[in-house]
Amino acid sequence: GPLPTTRIDPGGADPALAPGQPPATRLCGHPDCTAAGRRLREAEALLANLPTILIGLSGDLRVRLWNLMAGKVFGRPAETTCGCPLGAIEIGWDWERVRQGLERCRASGEPVRIEEIAFLRRNGTEGVLGLTINPEPGEGKAGEGFTVIGADITERKLMEKQLAQSQKL
Image (tube, rainbow, N blue to C red; front, side):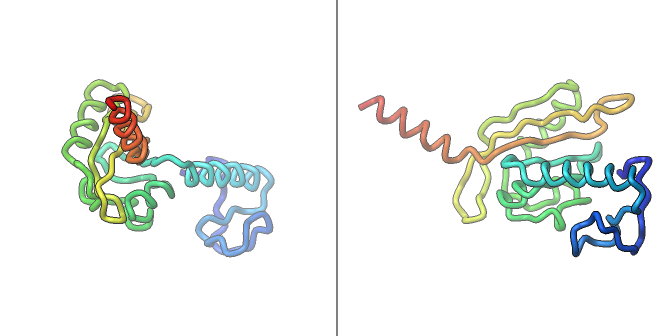
């Protein structure tokens, strides 16, 4: 959410903002607000552009964050996923393995690595994902939410297979 010192300006112009930024994210011109808003926008841009799948989930498994790479890999932009239950989004992956990983993470309070999850790539070919599910630190009990970090590891797995075959020759 917004930083405590951030005041939202519902429609006034802020010269510190890039042109075309929606009014809902405009900050007032107060120096604390402008600096805090700039840092927040920089952090959001960094997360959005990571070359890694990054999905933030609430405790009830609703998508809170869906970065650009998640959108590219799964063919679903953030606008269509945020607020939705993860299990209801048509991703074309082995949801049961992901769900079990989430349950293990919630029960243990520790990160859970799920190797080689089959999924259907946007181009219709079969792919392989590697995911790590991390519990979000919360005040109180575990299970406040999760951060899912992952990558499409299809090419790496293909190269490993080819290397293993060539070593047999």
